[in-house]
Length: 503
Image (cartoon, rainbow, N blue to C red):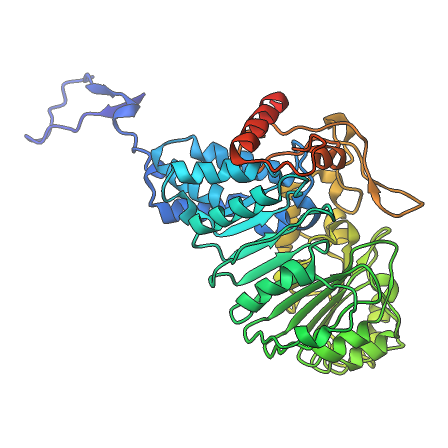
């Protein structure tokens, strides 16, 4: 309650007649409170605010795309967007744009369900800017996949980033993609997708406008000259995976290529003839990333193939100090698996003669190696107070630096489990999340067979897989008759029943 004093009389000086009675009026504070206009902010302002409150896109890439536990980054992102949509009419419009601009379909049943949703809501497809398909095309679903993907792309004319990134495919099942449209500037394929049958036809269609390309290098073959006549005038970023040392190298024209990532599909680390690849692509590179790659050649031979290189990213075991040298490298980043350490200033000074232009040396915890964009999105700082040999994670854990000084670490800490920093990810068993361990025999990742489910599994945008992913997907829509093709109605029926059982 507010109490206000009445103003004195303006008729003249008051006579001194002793004690006077003062008049007060009581005013309810609600009558003077300013109205809240936050919910009425322009959509573009709300959009900017919400984008800064959600997990950044780079945190949703890599292994995070397949870790769909209730507290995973993807689940947090989805829950936040659904909450925004439910607030009010104005926020619903902005939240819908956030919800649909990046679409990731992980199950074959989601594909016809999402297409049906777009058909029932005209204009919704215009919001989709990025589409990732990681669903396995199982037996009986190849026709469904091709037709519904074609329908989906037709209704989403603004897609600029397309990814077909399944973890595995059934070799005996034909899988094809329709024409994607000239608006695609970023194209991504997992290493299991057939290059010659699926990837190359799309490259012929889109090569003139691509700025980013990621695919698996296919095994070498004799007729490679038939696949060399491609020109990528705008391509700046190329990300290649390989599962053997006998891979194809295409002599494409890529005058704008500046950044190259190379990573293995299988562990343990393979002996990769990198120099042969850099003979074709290395001359114009300013950035080269080779985490978890064991080259056949010495590192110095690799550096000689990249005369313009400024930023080098390695696994710590590959750094030969001071056995290599380069006159233009300014930044070196190393992914380190077991514990973190900071390069001593004396060691850093030993590097200076071999790398005369070196400015910063950073260690990264290999927990985050799947966040492959980090070195580019957050390049080394060169401020006056910047330590030339730094370990951001160790400094942050010891409390030596403010997290605000490391924006990427602040984002990781905000949206991931606390023990993910410099340790195993998803290791909090009290929350029902089982640790991922490395099998000594094969090096592959294994997890407890306990099934997981996502509370938001009814959404078409992202639906959690159950724990036995491989076994489930290999049998989905398959009743033993290999020649039976599933139509949309049957797929939707199975998908709806599955969602109801999970829920």
